[in-house]
Length: 349
Image (cartoon, rainbow, N blue to C red; front, side, top):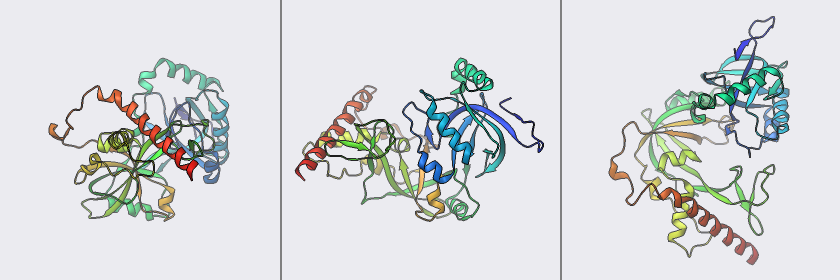
């Protein structure tokens, strides 16, 4: 069994072996970079793991186990898939079943020990089963009202958790950019260099990057509890809301306004404004910064489809299956315009 009893006198500790889906909310990829400083400061990390074709659970690795995980993860030339942790303890955190490491826990990956080798062999032979659960839905969020969400945040014992909220979009917040420019390699925020864009993640392997627009959109929402809340839409969640990638919308704007420079604030696109008044199901993450009181803005990680499909007339005219092929070129063109104008401005200033 993947989660089987360990020979421990307490009788409540287990060994767990499975394949990794997310690490601290990041999808596993060959360019993934662990933020070891942040992990060391928080003393733990969270891995979403799945055993065979079973449910996906959150595995919290603390202190030495978290440090061992980082070292093991880096030691593999490619990205490891299998994770085996000994003497773990099942617990309920944030309304879902989770697994936590103990002081005696040991961490192994892929080819470290025979059980992980055996699991890796199964994984390579059953890729379609292993990938049957989407990474975006592995958190099994609990449905709550906005009022209940903030009640949870105020509890002293609350942990980082995901919830499902049904809410109506009241407005898209103006006065601040609705997107940011990210590193094309690791999705961290990029900033202006002397001649090009530079990744803000010091551990990113890319020395020269292509900036990619990503959603960073703030909206106000309300629900039946009449609680008004600010949500911030990040990354793919923005596409799930508007139907378009941020890069595509930015590229379209610069293509239609060739004379504008990089300092020009791209206005909120109509595709986002059209969502005002819609009622949607939001998967939200309650983070450490919510507990500290630094901000009451809640991060949205996924937006589920509307229960009732929109009329066909809501689709923009001229859309075709071939449009997606040009979106990448348009995004690259927007990035080139941004980078070229930034370089000119830096040289002249």
